[in-house]
Image (cartoon, rainbow, N blue to C red):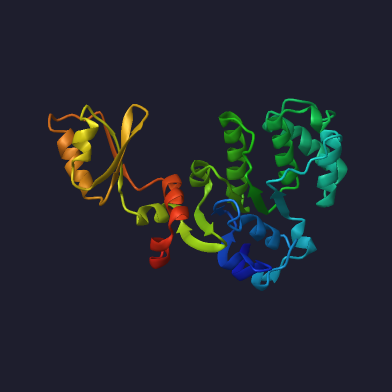
Amino acid sequence: MTLKIENVTKNFGEKIAVENLSMQVSAGEVMGLIGQNGAGKTTTFRMILDFIAPDSGNITWDDAAIGQKMKQKIGFLPEERGLYQKMTVEDQILYFAELHGMKRNDARVKLINWMKRLEVVGKMTDKVQSLSKGNAQKVQFIATLIHEPSFLILDEPFTGLDPVNTELLRDEIKHFRDNGAAIVFSNHNMSDVELLSDHLTMLKNGKTILQGKTQAIRESFGRTRVYLESELADEELSMIDGVISVAQQGSGRILQLKDAEVGRQIFQKVSQDGYVQAFVQSPPTLDEIFRNEVRDNTSSQEKPHE
């Protein structure tokens, strides 16, 4: 089972929303679709769901157009939440489940289980307007997953959740992935994207500026990031040729390097007495890459990231 987007373009008047987008997501994979607001993510989701049609290109599931039968197998969590505030949790979850072909009694049994699994504070007979923002978000998540979709589109799924509840939902997403669902996932928190995504597509003004396996994209930028805990002063570190910046992070510092080889010099200097509290050299984080690329994507256009 594979979603294919091939050379898709969508314009709204003179504004290019998505330009020549191609990506592929197979069963058991998570594609992180990231970019600033207005980058083209929501337009892409709407084209996949056939809410709007592309001006050119093709979107297929197993090499066929996404028809009504396939749509029943999709779970879509929109960024703009769509719960009816004055309906009870039970009434609307069962309504959504029936739209996806489930029998009402089967859906009720699953709802009871989901309420326990996600630790929803509230009863099925409560109206949504009485729930906290976080618990309403969990109910929206249940509505997305209750029919056990084989393809998930999740747009900002962790909005309004604390770290404990974020982990609960993250584990459920992993569960669906491990059971063969294809997932397209968008989130502004790059740490969540990095934890969940096998592959990444980064958009800027509708254009693809980075695409590939998550770790491969990070490695392609070189191991130019050092986390260091040492008694050495910032001034001494900054004077090392090839150190671009030194910034405090918690009890240590983050050093950005011009070249990965500079890390050897730093390690030799901070471990002269045979001991260093902490030294980790790694590629830039996805958050750092994202911030740099949305500011200036010239370099990414010149080199591929496979």
